[in-house]
Image 1 (cartoon, rainbow, N blue to C red):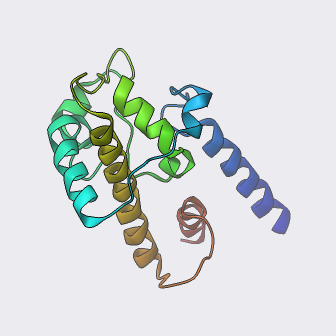
Image 2: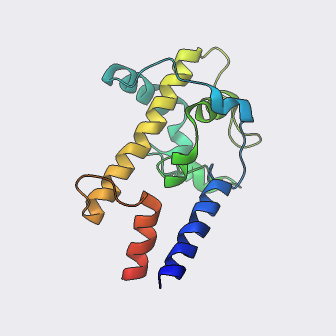
Image 3: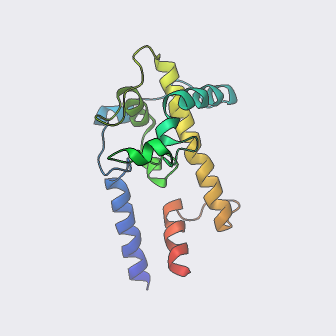
Length: 162
């Protein structure tokens, strides 16, 4: 039993690293991982990021980031679920790069007139979408504090136990 759980964890971790953007392909260049957000996450920055995200991203990714919109359902490749555990493996710079440059042909780049600080605010909001989803998942799993297993393992083992 221990061996099968270890094997499952290794397999899941490997798949997570391979499919870290939800589509199985890393779109940002390796150098993007090194980009650091100059902004700190604060209520004002998050509010600004949420507003920009609402204007630029929510029609496809949805207000909660889960890509459950009419526009998303019509896309040949469904937009990434930004609230999903796979977003945890993306560096802030990768999220910034994808927002700024898009993923042709289906995800457009943010308008060129959008300043870097605005793109970083969107990156902060995308991170916040995952934080909110993680809090929901932990509450649903009955985890109130401390660290246990990574979120994706909690979901996997809960399905196995049931």
